[in-house]
Amino acid sequence: MPSENMMRIPKTKSPEEFEKICQDVLEHIYKRQFELYGRKGQKQDGIDLISFSEKDVFVAQCKNYISNSDSNALIEKIKKDIDSAKKEELKISKFVVMTATDRDAKVQSAIFNIQCDFKIEVKFWDEIEEVICKKIYILKKYYPNLIIDEKIKKEKLNKAIKHLNNIKSISNLFNELAKVYQVAHDESNDIQIYNACVTMWNSVNKLKNFKSNWNLQLEKINADKVIEHISKDMPEFYDAQSSGGAANLIVSIQSYLDFFRIEENMINKVESCDTAIKLLKEYSERD
Image 1 (cartoon, rainbow, N blue to C red):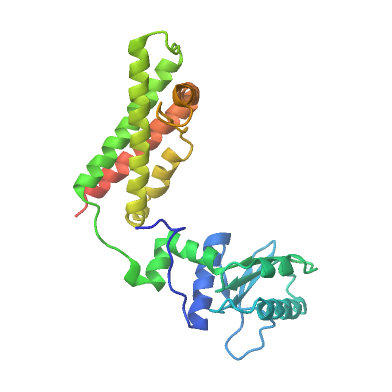
Image 2 (cartoon, one colour):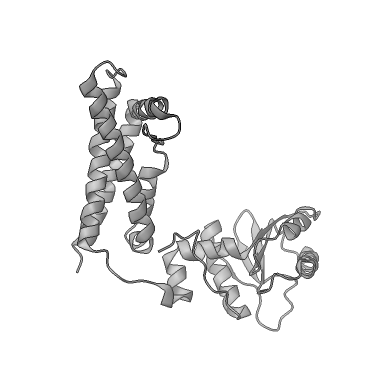
C-alpha cells in the first residue's frame, strides 16, 4: 500500500461533507476544536468554521472547488471572504482557507500579498488529503471502503522482529567497536564491521518496506512512528561497488561508527527497537 503522502483519494462533491472533512483536518493540524459558524441560511461573513481559545480566534472558509481551471476566481472569492471577515468583531488572529483545488502558486502569491491584521493560510487538497490518509480515524470516517482490515501475517511480524533485533544487536556492536576500531588494522575486525554494516543497512531497508506495506495496520497499534523513528536518521551505507569504490565504503563504515560512538544514539536505537518489538508481539497475540 502507498504511504500516506503518496495516496490519492477522490474529492467529495458535497460542500457539506467537505466542510466536515475540513473540520476534522483542522482539529488535527492545530490541536484545537473547531465548530460550525452560525447555521445554514444565516449570514456568515466569509466564515464557515471557528475556533475560540483564551488567547486567540481561528476561523476557516471551506471552498469545495473541484476544478483547478480558474485561479483568478478562487483568488477573488478568497479576498471577498477576507474582507467580510474583517467586518466581524471577533478579533481574528488566523484565517485559514481550505480548498479542494490542488496547490497553486498563483493563489499562494496572491494570498501572501494581502495586507491584513490577521495571519492568512491556505490548505490545498494535497495537504488535506495527506492528513486524511495519515489519520486512520479520518480515513475510516469518510472513506471506509479504502480501509484494509487484513491482519499482518505472523510470518511478516516475525521477519520485522528479526530486523529489529538485528538493529539492536548491531547498534551495541558498533558502539563497542567504535571505541577501539581502526580501519585496515585487523582484517578480522574489518570483515566483522563490514558484515555488520551490510546487515544493518538491509535490516533498516526491509523495516522501511514493512512499514510502507502495512502502514495503516501499524498506525492502529501506534507502531508506525516508532519504526519510522528507528530508520529516519540512520547513516547512508555505500559498499565497494557503489560510486567511489573503496573510499566510499570506508567513509560509510566510519559514519556508522561515529554515529554509534555517541552513547545516546545507541541507547535510543535499542530502546526504540524494544518498543517496536513489544507492540508487534502484542499485536500478534490478539484474536
